[in-house]
Length: 304
Image (tube, rainbow, N blue to C red; front, side):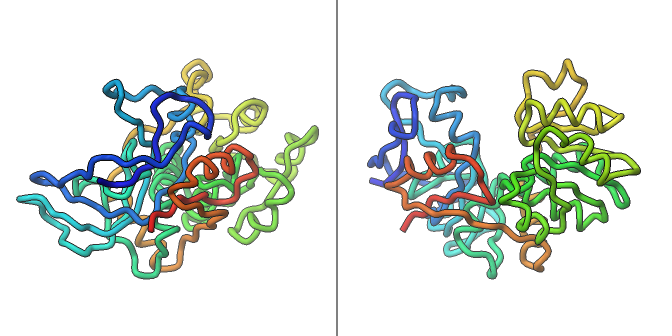
């Protein structure tokens, strides 16, 4: 048997429990990973709450988890690129909150030696989402980019990528996060009654693009600031995107993209802040901490 944090009926964090589940085996063209850490994602929260309904057999527990890191401990017949003992990080839709995980080699990349297990477990989703989103809205050198929710997991990477690419970043977040945003290279701004005027004062030449990780009024203000709506991407207002003429993130995660971003981390060009870690049997507490808000970086579930 293998340990997992899962649930049978959707609800709040309290429905997540430590479970014994069948230990999976790597089939042909697959590897099994002994998971060391997994990140907590908004997608995981939505799955647990029942907002997203993955297909499953009745009586089989749902196991959240969209990103992970661990050690390859089984290699299926005909699998190329990885061997026993390889340290990897990767992604999938579900099932990362567990001790053993079977994936294809197209879902994992080699973990940099200087990347901790906690960082590796929470790296893939935020890093890939930021990279995909910024490339979707065409961020380039000399431009000014507004990032809402800039201190979160996606925002943290997005700020750093923009700076690497030569763009100026205005990072919107609570004042308690402003020193952190300055350390990443962003000019911080707080939300409030004078937010629109404040952004215009910081960007007298205009805002060229916007990555929205907040929605609501923040998105409404962005519509006034960015003249080309095709250069606004929302991570949260998916239901309104088409009518507003703005973008959402396409499903283009890949092992190649992940390996490239991990390489930036290895060279010291990206950093990830770990806010809190929780052991697997406290996955419910990890979700409570995430839902409490004011997140800086990542919340991680660790598996001994």
